[in-house]
Length: 103
Image (cartoon, rainbow, N blue to C red):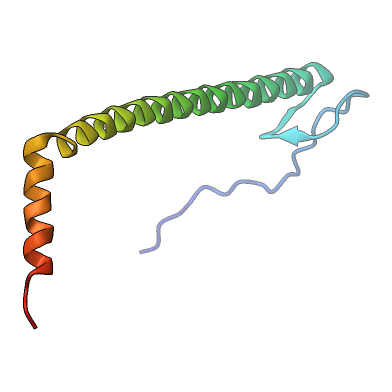
């Protein structure tokens, strides 16, 4: 036994003709005002993306600055440790022992 499906006529859907209509989307006419609003929304979205990208670029620069200051601080501490009497004496002993090894 076959199921009977309702039959819909294939009548063409004719949009309303208007002098300012450019194209149709989902059966509704896009007027000049609608196009302008969509263009304005698109412009705002592009500007927001540009502002966010600029904000990220500034944060990246700040992170590089903090990293550079931290690296300089670490280098200063390492220099002080290496040039201290105890460490320089230990390094001198290691180098002297390496040079005194017989072949």
